[in-house]
Image (cartoon, rainbow, N blue to C red; front, side, top):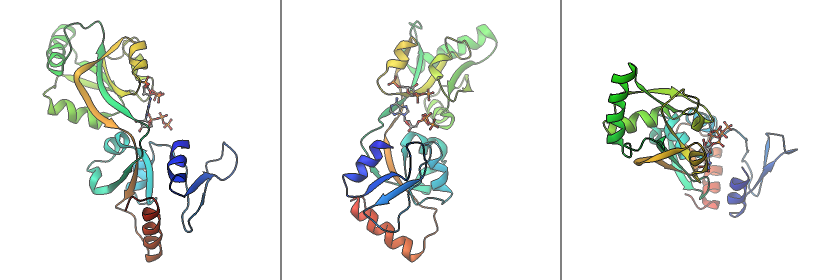
Length: 218
Ligand SMILES: Nc1ncnc2c1ncn2[C@@H]1O[C@H](COP(=O)(O)OP(=O)(O)OP(=O)(O)O)[C@@H](O)[C@H]1O
Ligand SMILES: O=P(O)(O)OC[C@H]1O[C@H](OP(=O)(O)OP(=O)(O)O)[C@H](O)[C@@H]1O
């Protein structure tokens, strides 16, 4: 939120909270006819696609995960240059024979034969991980849902591998996990999106045109 406010401020639009630090209502200065709502990054893709907001700032990862056919529903207007994170496939560091997706595929088959169930991969990015593994020929696995602290699942023995966001790599290192050499699924950063689904009056259209011109993203 703070970095988004900075990005808009540098372009002459001042965004802020309406009240205290805890209040989720926003205010906008420097342009008329624009309202600010503060929402969790994970909810913004749905609000855009359902046409309840015209513009939204969230991570590219969340847009691609949550919206099938995302580019028909939203338009990317500008990358904001922060919130950089990579969605990656990682396995226990002690799996010395597993460095690539091919190795993972072989390990997954061996795992199934040995244990009688499929190797478990924990993630909250179900769509992106499924598509990526299908495109790379890895099939013998099951996804386990993990909405947070995903790097802990291997230690907790609820999954054998993970797919999660990494930025500095510290969380992976601290949990003795290594990224597969060809395991980069997606590079993400905070991005300004426009809804393609929102109904617009002429007045809305004029405000949006003015705003995108001021932000230099038209
Ligand atoms: N360590 C990180 N560094 C940079 N960006 C990150 C990092 N972790 C998550 N992000 C990005 O932040 C955005 C929000 O991620 P996520 O929904 O996991 O956050 P959260 O804090 O769990 O959200 P909330 O609790 O508000 O639902 C995503 O676009 C993600 O790529
Ligand atoms: O590579 P690093 O710099 O260590 O950052 C990566 C961590 O940051 C995010 O977690 P977050 O703090 O959002 O918590 P969560 O796992 O509960 O979502 C992400 O899910 C990783 O766990």
